[in-house]
Each structure stands twice: as C-alpha cells, then as structure tokens.
Image 1 (cartoon, rainbow over the protein chains, first blue to last red):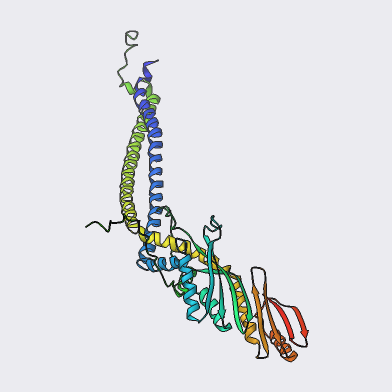
Image 2 (image 1 turned 180 degrees about the vertical axis):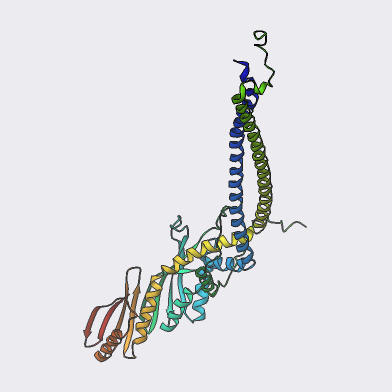
Length: 224
Length: 178
C-alpha cells in the first residue's frame, strides 16, 4: 500500500470504530430504553389497577361484613335443612297455620349448573286462605332463599289444605380470590339494590347451629 | 543536482498527497471528530436516560410493593366482596326463576275479584301448570267475574279450561292462569 494513504488510517479507523460502536451500542441502548419504557408503562397500569382495587376495598370497609352476613343467610354454606324447617314453622305459627308432614331431602348429590346444591322441602299446611297467601309471601321474603316448585290447594270441610314443595340452596364458600393484578369493580347499583332487598328478608329464627361435641370418654361414676 | 533531490519531500505528511489529498484527510479527520462527539453525546444521553428510567422504575416498583401490601391487608374485605358478588349473582337467578310465586300472586288476584257467591275450591301450581277452580250458584256472579278479567291486563294468559253445571252443585269452572 502506498505511503500516501497512511495518514488516512487513523481517521478512517476512528470512523469505522465509531460506526460499529454506534450501531451495536446504539441498538443496545435504544433496546434497553424501550424495554424500560415498556416496563414503566406496565408498572404504571398495574399501579392504576392496584389503586382502583384499594379505593374499592377501602370504600367498602366494614359494610362488607353486613353484606356477607346477608348473602350467607340467603345461601348458606351448608345444608340449611334445619334453618328452613325452623323458618317455615315460625312463619306458619305467626299466621296461625298448622304445618304437617314436613320432610326435606337433598335433591341431588351433585350441585346444579350454578354450583348450588339443592334441598327439597315438602309439607302440608292447613288454615285460612288469607293466612296461606301471607305465608307464601313471607316465605318468599325470607332467608334461606327458597323457590316454590309446587303448591296444591284444596278446600276440605271449609278449611284450606295446601301441599307445598319448595327448594332451598346452599354452597360452600368460594375457594379462590381473583389475581391481585386484576381490576375489581365496586358493587353495581343493581347489586346494591338486590342486597337491600335481601337484607329486608326475614332472617332465620336460628342463625347458628350448635357445634356437635366429640364423644367423650365416660367418666366412671363409681370411682371415688 | 536535480536528480539527487527527486526522492526528498519536505511537506508535512498530511500534505504528502498534494493539495487534493490534504483536503480529503481534513474531511476524514473532521468526520471522525464529529462522529466521536456525536457518539459521546448520544451515549451520555442514553446512559442518563437509562439511569433516569431505572430510577423511575425502582420508585414505581416500590410504590407497587407498598400498594400490594395495602391490598393484601384488606384481603378479608376482598374475600367478603367476592363472596357477596358470587352469592348475589346466584340469588338473582333464583329470584328470576320464581315462576310459581308469580302465578300464585296472579291466582290470589283472581280470588280477590270473586264475590261471596263464588267459592274457591282448589288450585294447582306446578312448573308447567297453573289452574284454579271455583264453584258458584249464580251464573250472574260468574259472568261478572269474567267481565272483571276483561277490564284488566294483569294476566299474560287466562284460559277457561272447563265450565260445568249441575242443578245441585251449581256452576263449577276451572281457569288456567299465566
């Protein structure tokens, strides 16, 4: 190579070096900057979700306990056979009606498509027409929530005898909470209005069933 | 003499290639210098930008951790809300599917229209059936009752299933109410 090109080596070398460093380093830097930007956007949207979630939860505060109790009266966590029987008897008694042949049985071992287990309750009532009408209305507006499946009324000796079949429901508590990164929304006006409706329903006369006691070893009464 | 000076060139090396070569070398050096300066500036901006972004990211992450902790401390409220919403959706469906209760109310409405000379006998309410039977000694009372049905729109369907007459029992009629 002729000597006259030798002075160009350094500047051209620098140009090539800078171009290489510029392209490689520049791509890396731009990539990093874009990644950081994306992370910031992601964290920001996550923060919005968390702030929204926190606002909703703080807004609910202690009222959620009342809501929780109301919905658990409506759909208990376990078989409400005793609660419903007591409720039916109590409402019938309040209207001077006579309840007979009260039987309840679990409709199916499997829960229905909404995940609810069903309990069928059958009984007969005897009394006046007005009282029976009030009874049906009061049972409709009481918890545990029920659905009538059949009402058969007939007049026998100036007295109305009614055969009733109704179902009531229960379901275990939900086992999962939604992911912390998912947004949650406050209860809608429609949900709040339904809650208000349920809270006005007559609560079961017995709200808590006594815990079954474990069998204890019988103490020898003859030991002195 | 002229022959002995032929290989000696006293010009500086950058001008060794002549005036054209010198200019080219100047351009090359300027380019190298400008590119170096630009690279330094860009690198500086890039590094400062990265630092600032990382700092922002750290601050945001700290805030995120703080918020997550606050949300977790309200887990009981959240589980109560999830339970409430879940149960409400089911209660809504149960209430929406209460057909018999609605038909019972409609039957009671019919009973409300009856006068003393019309007697309620029986009624049957099932998933697909809703019938109510009355007895009366007076055809006029029966006619008045039917007239009162025409005057109101509380019933989706009201069908006269049967109408019997016997001299001893009077009129007996069955209505399907929906």
